[in-house]
Every structure is written in C-alpha cells, then in structure tokens.
Length: 121
Image (cartoon, rainbow, N blue to C red):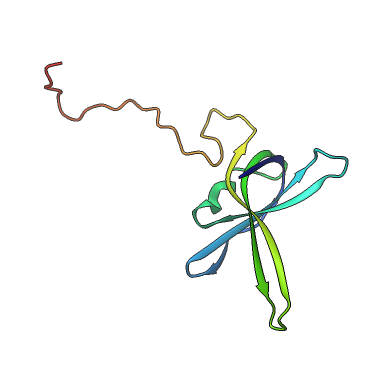
C-alpha cells in the first residue's frame, strides 16, 4: 500500500473491458524532484467514480497498490507489466459542500424515532 501527492493532469473515460470488468485511467504530475514525473493510475470496478469530483489542475493524494503480472506473447516471449491501482483519492481542496473525493458521505441529520419512545429510562 502506497500513497503519493500530485496534480491531476488528465482523466480518461470509463472503459468497459468485459462483461464483468471496467476500468478508468488518470494521470498525475508529481513534482517532488527536479524532473516532474507523469504517473498513470487505474481505477477498477466500483472505484471508477472516485475521480469524478476532481478536475485537471487539482492537487490530490492517491492511495494505491502496486500490481505486477507476467504475459507470454504468441511468439513465446515472456513480458512483465506493472500497474498502479488506486483505491482511494483525497482532494486537497477544502469544501463545506460535500465529502472529500473517495470518502463516504457523512450523515449529519439527527435520527428521530417514528414512534413514541415508551422505554422506562
């Protein structure tokens, strides 16, 4: 489990890869060194919507897992691929109008019983 902070450069539309799999990719610019790094992340399944409230230029913190896999080409050549799979996105812009990106909404309404309370305490 890793995390990194950067500026959202771009986000792609959601892709339906198969009947049971969908993904969405986005790129952040990470500026902690002399040479800015463009890092590509992917969101999968129900996490595809985590990037909805974020616009290009916004600073975000991405929590992600590093995934790797082996693939054999039709010619028998073995290749290895890595992907950065995001599972949580935090926006650094503060807003009182809603929850942070990637966070569940907080219910602030008081719960009121629908029937009178007849408990003795």
